[in-house]
Image (cartoon, rainbow, N blue to C red; front, side, top):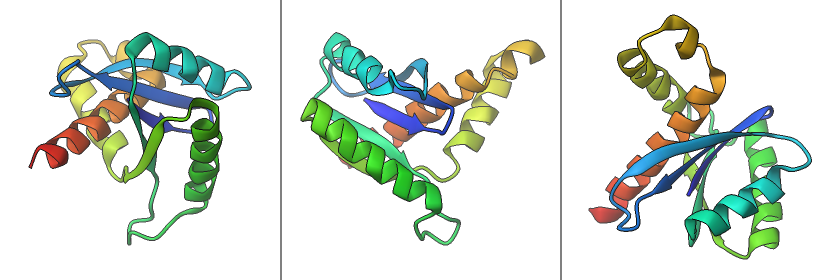
Length: 134
């Protein structure tokens, strides 16, 4: 499972059982129910590892949001006991936006921010799976 963590929303993507393909699943509100909602998805999809996007600065250094993501990942790890790995998420939202423009026909649907979040999570997971298989 991968998570594209944001202050308002968290995009979620998972893999197929053979860990070959990544696909966007949902976008969760970043509220007091976030961890409980993620735990439900962990059970539903039999998740054994979680990848969370680490929003690094352009030069590769940690950003202020990186600290928030690290804190969130610790809380989630404590709640679920599953291995969590932080990965560089630079450019994933931009790539997701381009993918949506190419595949979603109507402008109204393209403006759905949740669509970008869950597709960014899928792009992160695809990249992770590709690197892992090499």
